[in-house]
Amino acid sequence: MHSVKISEILGQPDVEAADAVLDLIRALDLPEKMREVGIRREHLGKIANDAMGNLLVRNNCRPITSVDDVMEILEMAF
Image (cartoon, rainbow, N blue to C red; front, side, top):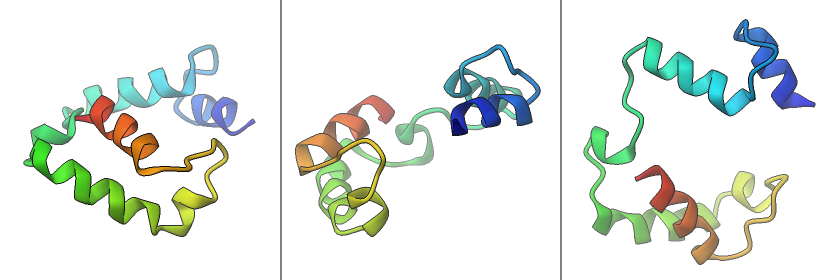
C-alpha cells in the first residue's frame, strides 16, 4: 500500500500517511489551507470544473465522477 510506504519514508511507520504528511507540513510551517495561499472561495467552482478535465482526476483510485465530488474536496481544503 502506498500510504504505508509514505508513512515509512516520513519516519512515522505507525502513523496514518495523511497524519504524517500533515505533521511534515506543520514542521515546515507551510500553509494548510487553500485560503492561506490567496485562493478565494469564489475561485473554487472554476478550479473544480478545470479539475474534471484533468486525466489524473478522472483516473483517480477513488472515483471522482462529478464537479460536486471535486467541490466537496475543495471545500475541505479551503
